[in-house]
Amino acid sequence: MDDVRSCYIDGAWREGGAADVVVTSAADGVDLARFAGAGPADADAAVAAARAAWPTWAATPVTERAAVLRTAADLLEKRADEIARTAALEIGTPIRMAAGIHAQLPAAAMRDVADQAEAFVTEEQVGNSLVLRESAGVAVAITAWNYPLYQFATKVIPAIAAGCTVVAKPSELAPLTTMMLTEALEEAGLPRGVLGLLIGTGPMAGEPLVAHPEVDVVSFTGSTSVGVRIGEVAASGVKRVALELGGKSANVLLDDVDVATALPASISSWLINNSQTCAALTRMVVPRSRLAEVEQALLKDLAARPVGHPLDEDTQVGPLISPAQRERVVSYIESGVLEGARLLAGGAERPPDLPEAGNYVSPTIFTDVTPDMTIAREEIFGPVLCVIPVDSEDEAIQVANDTSYGLSGAVWSADPERALTVARQLRTGQVTVNGGAFNLRAPFGGYKFSGIGREGGRFGLDEYYETKAVQL
Ligand code: NAD
Image 1 (cartoon, rainbow, N blue to C red):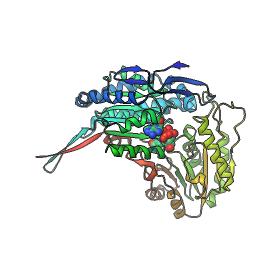
Image 2 (cartoon, rainbow, N blue to C red; image 1 turned 90 degrees about the vertical axis):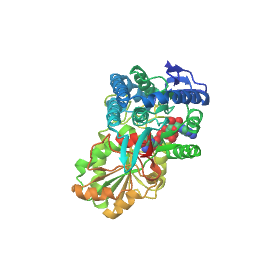
Image 3 (cartoon, helix red, strand yellow; image 1 turned 60 degrees about the vertical axis):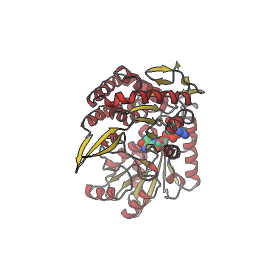
Image 4 (cartoon, rainbow, N blue to C red; image 1 turned 135 degrees about the horizontal axis):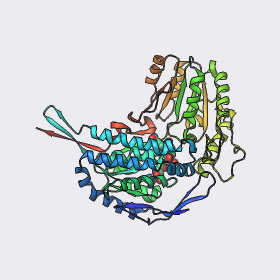
């Protein structure tokens, strides 16, 4: 177990002033790191350093800012194996996919942000006005534990690229890889004060940042309940806010679907990162006429996805982040049984032959789920799939939209035009048609209770600029 200093402020690492934070392994509960967490005084110091560094960084040419980010992306990628191992233990991500999603994807996003920032239009003539896009000032980035570096790549990196200075607070449950990114940025030559890192709890380190009068922009990724609180605190200081929140995304199979093509991709989208994914497709809306066939295919595919230790190369589903998260997921499985859903696979029992101290849950599929059941309405954030049978395309669309969330979704049909017509009717920030590939440059964000604002490409950069009109 390493001794870690939790705060990077004004270019130096130091201990925090709040109670200890302990990072534990998802696989067996062993402590991975312990440190004095960041507290309100650390938040003050980090914001002061960011405010002092801002005028010079904002005036630094975008090409120089982008160059630092590209160098840091290369340095980060060199540590991909170490990052993968750390994320596998902290978060439970199976090692076979950990380097891709926790190191290579963030590095690719960083390079793309650098390109997009250089291409961003910061001056435009509109009639007799010169419209200027100016760096918005000091930004705060507060992130969740499920994709720590990707979330930094879509908040901290665009903010820096746009000439903002940033204080970042990762989740205290999985902060270790964000320290590696901070080191990479430092080694790449990022001037002191441009990035501060505070590892601490939400109430001790996060909320003082959101409330701080010297902060201009707050970007948050996490649960809807905390997002609402952050929105309220930020509103009292009239700060700009972006909120990336929870989801309960629907995967709509139309009645002409090719099950053999749709199912493997659908299951991968449901189980990615052990279903600890905001955009996971956790509701499968299936024509009743195809239900038996889909159920059979689900069972066959799931049998080929072993649950196991995250460092085992064969593992496809690892443990959840914490004992609390495991208990929460198990209680949702129990509620599904109680409310009358039919258990097709998995259940509340621990998967066999895995350590009791690990946060393992069997991937669980409920079928004959109705839209009013708790498991169909609330975000579970664990491997529980709800199969909801419907009798028509109109009902499928109505069921898909019958949620307070609106983050993602998918449609499958043998006829791409038909699938696109359905996609247009879904009230959600992203929709994938017939397994369309993830696109770093596409806007990502939520309708309804899934959030405010967009990340990704030029849409994400937009959050970190202010707009000024000069009449000539
Ligand atoms: P969470 O809301 O518990 O915590 C998120 C962050 O907020 C953490 O860093 C936490 O310390 C901090 N925090 C908590 N209380 C705070 C407060 N009062 N003030 C300031 N900061 C505070 O979420 P989580 O459990 O870390 O992550 C899971 C949630 O994140 C899920 O709901 C998931 O859907 C969502 N999520 C959304 C996206 C997206 O892009 N929409 C991406 C990933 C995760």
